[in-house]
Length: 82
Image (tube, rainbow, N blue to C red; front, side, top):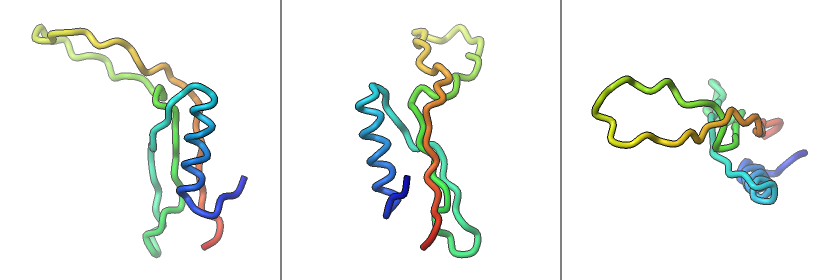
């Protein structure tokens, strides 16, 4: 699929995520070295990845629920032409 701007692609994926019952977050950006323009943008599900192993300390007040489920839903937006 092609979009005129990066923001249109992000909006499209956000709308798709809402319809599919998940939330998104902007994950990573890569820029060109020559002119500093964004060449790649990754949008992922907010449950992507997994939490690091918890530190073993006795001063934790409350255990946090596990929210990261290694979800693979993502989109890569790539700049093709200027």
